[in-house]
Length: 180
Image 1 (cartoon, rainbow, N blue to C red):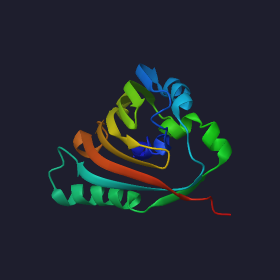
Image 2 (cartoon, helix red, strand yellow):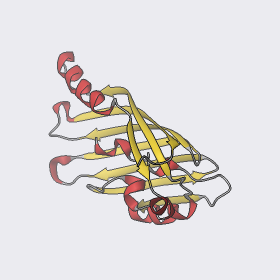
Image 3 (cartoon, rainbow, N blue to C red):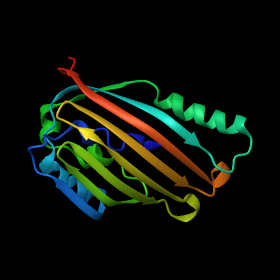
């Protein structure tokens, strides 16, 4: 679930006139380094919302269990998050802005960011019995807003039913100057 905000800060945006980024079989750090060239963040106060549009737990036969699990995840993402992007952060975004805190062995199968669009596919191997996660992301961005759809599949033998699929939409916009 920590990857739900995976692309939100990244999509704080580059102008379409700026360089594009294209990568294959690349680490989070490699993509972050390449994307720093293309990102022209606008400093200020930003607000992000995440809407979990679909959540499935294949193999969980009791709908009450699946509904309870899904309800907890949806509730955790339901509220808007507001944060300040300083001028320094905007000029030198960290790798965490591109992919959150790294956990597991994650690599971008593909990553394209150009002309106001972003498309990416990522695979994370969690090692041992913790399973894998695959995620695709596509959407639009500008220097003041973003709108991204994410499709995630987690395969984990320790999870009820052994798997989970989720679709979510993340939207964000610059709302003004940072609050004092």
